[in-house]
Image (cartoon, rainbow, N blue to C red; front, side, top):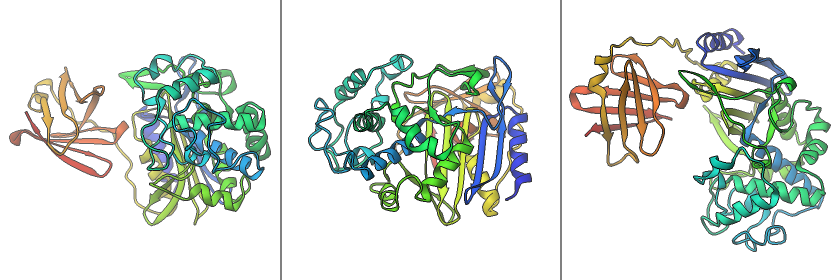
Length: 417
């Protein structure tokens, strides 16, 4: 593994204040790289360390899925049983199975997509209140007709587990996974405690701004777990070694249907095939991948970033698999305010789903897509800008009144109105 080159990436990310968080890479269960940079808490100037803990968002779904398979193995529940005995008020409950919840084929509407979600997400909710919210959202499609990601599925799975074991979700997680594996830094979160090495999360707008905290009674098994990268690599190593659930259960977990496994997704890297999940809650972002052939696990947690986490994961994997990767320099191209004027305006194309409006505020250029917040652009060279946090690149052609937007391997040419 090219440790020196990976270290140099983290050195520049820290020097330029582009990323706050931690990473761990393990091979065949042995930790081969770890690094923590930035602050766990800016107010008290507390630095991140390898003991710092982060909310991991939807990576929690992998834990919940493993717990469901444990319950199946212990004959507490069955994947093909329908959910009406648990949730009679949920639309199509007589048709939706536990398996449908696991692989996002239930049709149950995703409550976090609702416009009012961010009005109550910091307030505690009871099981009854959450079921009412989810039931009110009804179904987006007939059960098992297709797949669509829904946090509602995993909140409901948490309640099924609690009924099966007659224990709180947090206790089930401890009994079945964290205590047997010795994961001392992994548990269901509560209010963030800096004294307990937990991190706050931050968004960047000219400076780091502390984000509010989702109350963990809401996401439950969909996103309430706190952990750190070292613990996460141990978890996924054991999962794929059949030390949490058996080989038959794991096979079902990683079997894809419409690109979804059961609490897990497939990830390509060159000719390699990996499995894992990403997570996002408040301004925390996380990644956990495992490449079965090489027994490589990589976990990344961040509590603030303006650099794309996926690029860090690519760099880590590239350093292990001896693939090329570029270390950014973050050298900005200096422009005067009048230099920005030729770029201003509204850009669109019939084949692109939204309009992009380009505005400026003194020396800073901003882009805003239809129905979304404006985001700042950094000039990298003449007529070229980027928004690293989302991996967006813009290239302007002022004489032709055109703009090319690049993201995720796609490129679209838009025309100025």
